[in-house]
Length: 409
Length: 130
Image (tube, rainbow over all chains, first blue to last red; front, side):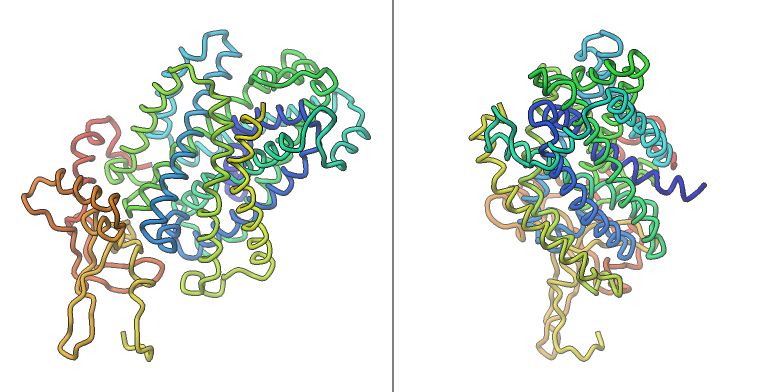
């Protein structure tokens, strides 16, 4: 039983990190425009996040240091600060988007305008971050997030042309009417969404808080190799139902309610309710992760005490940062900015911050000073290096593609 | 250090590392080092320096000077000095720098105390652990 709950951290990270508001919308949008022809990017992304999460988890378990600690130790104060600003900016944007996503889910369920929900959601979120135990957080949102499996059930109920879907998967090129630049832009967006830096910040910090040791490496790996592929599979089913329902009709997904529409079509009201619970859990879980991650990264950069396992008064600066973030997110959302647009931009910008986050992890994971015998094996190094190259390419391409495609329009 | 190595790379092994107290609670980062020349002419680390007052000059550029300027303005004393932890308090180093004194006795966390007294302690539940 204990082992089952130990895996919950991985599932929460996967659901919240892999299937957050950005993935819900990006995957459905990609499915509706490109069918399954970008599915390979999700697979590539899942392998990448597995490689680096395993590395950062192992570093956390063996050396007791979370990721942002290492970023500064290896990059120095100046480049470290640049990375702090970039990744905190991205994580904060994502945090704002997730709160908007929770509010949108509640609007769909209640028909009360999302703007009225925003302050309520922010207050609730802060109380959760202030008060609720870490274990409760991960189990509740991890398990509730599993209700997104309803998308798989819906896909099966829609009895799609499986051969046709498979053909889309195996022909990785834009369908007629879409250009290669658009296709590449969304490839970078999906890749960025899969590898968002806050996933490793949250995962490694959680590991340090739970006081993992070298003995826990096996459980940690189980988390990674179960959690992220599960998140990836959920992403793919969301794209698949959109490909089945919207692609033939030529409808482009633009709102969260459209993401849930295929489920309602296949399974009726009950399906819709389950999907909405899944949306709520995934976005609320991701809001918790991103909110804490902003606090983690700044506290680790400056060497402050941080975390949810000590009373808030002993990690006062950390809790002050989390509180300020939550308070600041509300007026940003109340400007009526579209949370979906915020997510899409944050996903592309996160591609920019990636190399500076993943390079130090790869370097430290090879340093016997920190890792002793637990340094990277050949496979981890080969994959890590290949992915670092891919990450650099994606990060260089992100902004030009964004300008060329006018943000994918 | 009784190692056979002639040199010790303090920049690699000490700078930017996390300082932790005997309970493994984070104290601060090693933002800079204070060096002293020994009788034999070699350099020894005499103290770990912490806080924006030490980090600013190392960050360098306009950003670094702003960091120091803001820190100076926010400090109550007329001529503030960076937080200082005597090198003799360091017990050992691994992935972190371990010191023998507790975080609260080291007096290098002015901002933490301010945040605690001004904001966090006023919120119900601030003292409750998980």
